[in-house]
Image (tube, rainbow, N blue to C red):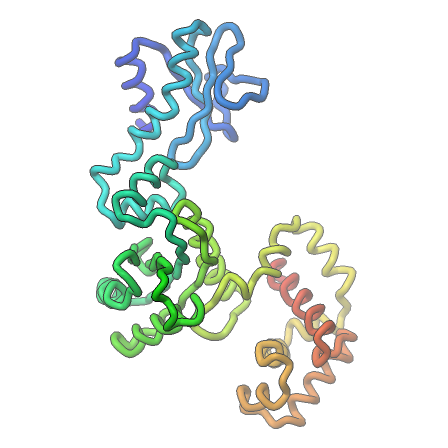
Length: 338
């Protein structure tokens, strides 16, 4: 029996009413369904319906009856169900924060956390770190290097943890969230000899928006894997274009790629050496000398490859506008798994 069913049974026993529920996006055939849109509560003359959240999922509660008593219960039960599911007193600080980051806490639970731990109105950003070993040792180091007493490290899975970094007035040593992430990664390298991967999320105004930063940081790591981006620290800012294109239906992306592709372009995409050369050139800000040094490649060899890309695609990626177009094509290729 699921926890929500148990809660429902307890409500029925305590209040002497009959209650059912269904998820808003997965309605059950054996439960009465409200066919009209509504905000908080409504009824159809036979049943009273009300909206509530359980572990950040929207549900419709169904009470048998449509009298004044059922309507009063429909107004009170959403808050009651949320309070039952939170159990803040039983949660440690890190467990409570983990639920907030995963979007499993109500606004009341978040309010209680920020009040209890004095982080109200404190801006923050999140750094997700992926490790292949020494998780417990890494957690201890990250706690040690936290910038202030509010910063908290939470283990999210067997090989990932997240640092919630609160921004204070004294934070002038690090120029950006990416700089801070690089400092942490370097510290883990020096202390434990591990190559951690870090994803940096956007800065948010307060803790209730922390899930946004957490998602951004996780996406940065995911995109870095998909696009085989070099380096250990990745910011959500690097992949804004990817995120925009990922939101377009796959059929439309395929249509765009088909319009822009030809046999020669496909040959470039299938040549890993050519793609790596182009990627390094773009990451080096279209600087030929820097790319040659990074790839340990003779300048003439690099220019030959850039010319070959231009002949195949019609794009001179030494030009900023053509470089942007080429970047879009490579993203489409990766997103579609071509």
